[in-house]
Length: 316
Image (cartoon, rainbow, N blue to C red; front, top):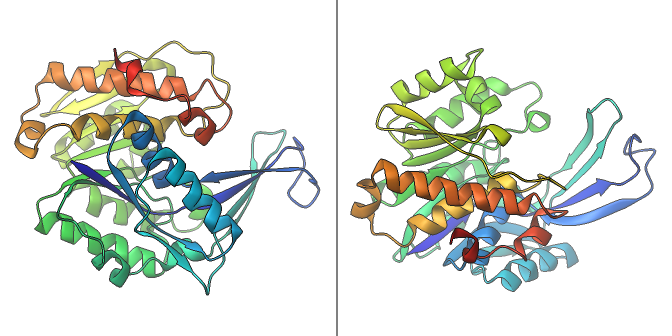
């Protein structure tokens, strides 16, 4: 069945002058990105049927994003070009102390509207993935994001969620991010969080407490990614650890998106009743395969470059 991803498609401008601020740096690497964009590309690379709902500018960068998605085989009918807003850019530089100098130049991504979402044919869509880092920022996308969730619930479409917390997008408004996330956490069928996100969303100080809170307060299947320590699976009120795949990482960008993409790709081969009746052993296999996809992505520089080498043969 078809998977629909919704959220931002943007251009990352990465300063390659290590330790320099954005103002000081002179060399930048241009990369296509956005978490839902990465997830869609990963699903397509694995051989899945996927479409991306996003808005880009009617400019060279928007065209690059659409062409990149088409090169992977992602459906782009719902990737709309906005003549009135420039494609969204994220500028980032890594400082010597580990901090990031970050500027988010928001443009077209935030303009995806309720009308745009209503124009999408959901008849063949079996899974919708909400993985936008910008979906909780004020604007049309925020309303469209929530509207699509309500449509998914009405049509009984399988709902996947990744909050994709970015502190630099919510420097003074974490409470808003948390409260909006919980609306999705309580309504989704599957969600993925990092250990840091798990503790943030549950207002707890330890992974153990965060896991217990999520098991009590949510009804969906969930995973907490733990890096080299593997992946925690929350299923039917119990928790399990699925081992990680040993890897010497070159770049971890997009690894979490590849993980989610691999989970959804595998689920898309099942009907709704089969998904809801998956056993622990079957979920173990799905998560182990997703760990393989995440590990493979770490072996290359940049998510889109890594996805060129991603295919479903790694599951064998």
